[in-house]
Amino acid sequence: MRILHTSDWHLGRKFHGTSLHETMSRLLDEMINLIDEEKIDVLLISGDVYDQAMPRNESVLLLSQTLTRLAKRGVEIVIISGNHDSATRLGFGSQLMKGAGVHLVTSQTEVGQPILIEKQGVSVAFYGIPYLEPRPIAERWEVEPSHQAVLTEAMRRIQADFSQTPANARIVLAHCFAQGARPSDSERNIQVGGAFSVPASLFEAADYTALGHLHGMQQVAPSVRYSGSLLAYSYSEEKHRKGAWILDLDTQGKIQVSDYRWKTRLELKSLTGTLAEVLDPQLQEAYGQAFVRVTLTDPERPAKAHDKLKAAYPYLMEFHYQPSGRTESQRPAYQRRGQEEDQMEVIASFYQHVRDRALKEEEKNYLLKVLEQVRQKRAEA
Image 1 (cartoon, one colour):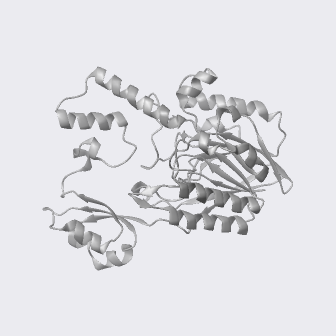
Image 2 (cartoon, rainbow, N blue to C red):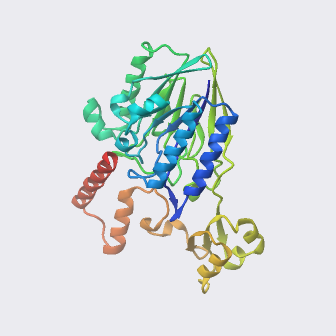
Image 3 (cartoon, rainbow, N blue to C red):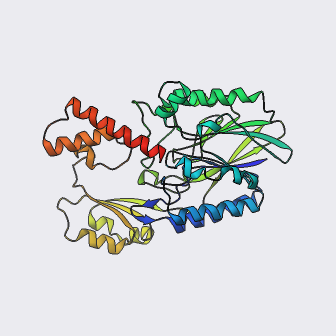
């Protein structure tokens, strides 16, 4: 059996306001060609299929067309919901789609229920763990409200089924932050109560764990891997080589893993220097069509710098002016780039900057409650 491990499609994502729909459409065409050429039997999508809980019409249509094309080829598809997805919306019609070989796992009630697929004389039991918001799930499962406690219980339920479902191999799909993995700036913060990561050893009972959430393609443990996002979604991913893992399974349950790197990609480039240096003709020739971020270091801010840069780099996404000698750490936290900043740190920094005093303890507690309410509403959307 041949399996393609992907995750974090983020259909509907924009890059600094620029739609990525056409690029994503071309990449999915490339994926289907790869599936044809490599004779892939099963496609895995480990969460964050969409970028928003209420996806755009064009994104829903693109997913529908892609799944239909794959189903017609006889490819089985296993999908779990991620923290960007609405579990209810993504899971709509899941019972009907099983007949077409599209298996959706979007509810905690499905954790521990195997999806048994047999291809090429090999049987594999797939177990999906959709993104589980700790606090509401903890109440239902009677565990501590933390990612580790909830995922530990999820794996307990999965392992309890092992003896009931004979198979050559057992593969788990999960959407979480495993300790030891490298994050980027474009993942949404899932921190709860000061903790957001779980040990990779939680998944050691599985023959392979197909993780989603982090956007860098990486191996965390011998049998635990992230496939990463299909496209780069922040400048922290500028040097990523996006791709997917191909798993080959034999009748003894032995798994061999190889990688494939997408040819369709966003070219991102960060340029730093004086205006004259950044406008060097060779740089313009090399990166004139890239999504560019520019930081100018001239001692004095050049006149009409943005207009000149935009003329040279039509896809200028970010423009910063930072004279030589001033460090990023000297700027207020709320002005810094990156979604990995702690939300309370950003709020506190902004308040300090505007009011010239720190937040009081009761103000912090109030804001923490508001942030938690927003998190839960987002998860239930």
